[in-house]
View (spheres, rainbow, N blue to C red):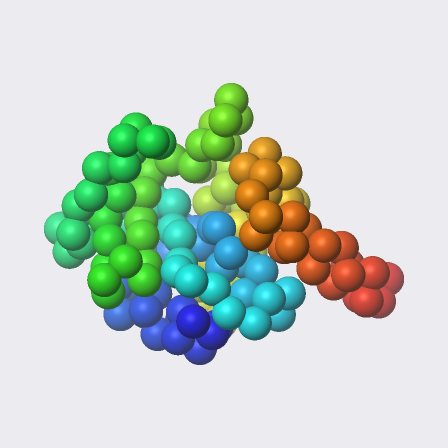
Amino acid sequence: MNSATAYELLRAVDLPVGDYAVFGSGPLLVRGIIEDANDIDVIARGSAWERALDQGDLTYLPEEDVTVAGFFDGALSVGTTWAYGDVDMDINVLIDTAELFDGVPFVLIEHVIAYKRIDDLDKDHHHLRRIERWRQARPL
């Protein structure tokens, strides 16, 4: 999906700003680092998580030992944790430091880099190379 589609999905779910942030590949998509993403991952707390629980299809993911609320046949997933390996990122920090793009909060690129280094999938290596090229192309 492209960034326009991602915005449409996020707005349709209508989570309250201040209690969620887009994570995963979404922050790369909105910054133009990648052109498309398979899905959109969202971390949520408080009222945003309550809304996701009320509206989404709940699924337990045993590998991560978490429950997520899914929307649009899995195109959008909302959860309350973001953990890979031995690192459990504090969602309060991720949400509180998120940058707004067109009114939608996206986690800082530094947080995306940190988890992609931990997750260590081929896709993550590709994304890390794209992030590095994006950083080099940006004016100081």
